[in-house]
Image (cartoon, one colour):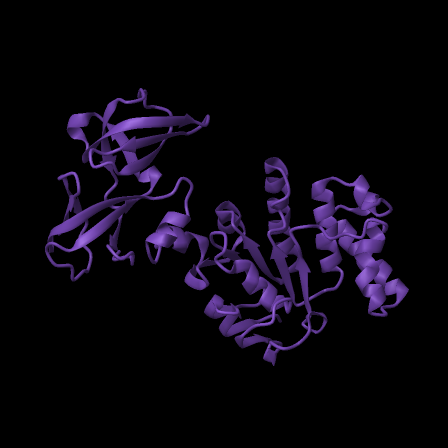
Length: 360
């Protein structure tokens, strides 16, 4: 079992508060990803769990044991860093077994654990090599293997793939997903890459300015964002937002007048919005399509297009200078600076308060 409970965790450097009362429960065998913009506190939170940062207040409880004040070596956790942190003079085998030797584990047990771990990570043929003779992906697997042999209750990963090139990052991402299924252990992973968060996580914890904005499955955060920050952060390309106000709200739907003057009718859902309430309409690129100018929900002008093979991204501006991104399957032939109509899938649009909280 590896159940982690974080209660009102705070961390401050002098007068600057980095973590502002974090409450979080991580269940046994979950793959939890901390994600957010640079400086949001995700790495500080991970290092606080690991014991590498002294917290200002709050509790960290692992399986009913308060580990808040325990030194890192006593927490039964293993951390994989962004830099591989391998001993250059040691072989792969020696790097993987070093912590076990320091702990006084019997040689036969060490040999068995290293062999089993090397098989899982496909490092068998590399055990006698030095780190300088390995590729970036191989070094990262050695760093992960060094953590696995310790058989910790929780694995902590601090942006372990950020130093790898794009192709290798995808490969290692798949290997990490498979590793989690094989080991059936609790893993906590920090990244700024939303693709890693969406593909690896059972549970995503999205942080911003030292606070948790939303916790949930990747699909929950994508389809039901708590606010504009979450909606704008998750998704590539990001969600587009259009200013507007409520014209009417009733059993037949919600009428929203956009800034350019167009009215759109959203499906009926429970709401207490009153006429004139300022709102923001959110729409993802896959829920906008290009039509002729006369038949669109609103008009725009194409600024830039990006052709990516299977998809094309169109970046357009409305008459009120609001930006909208469109994902297309390359069936549209549109020229730069051309006027177009935009058709919105109104069943998939989101409505936000002007302050940012999601209405629905």
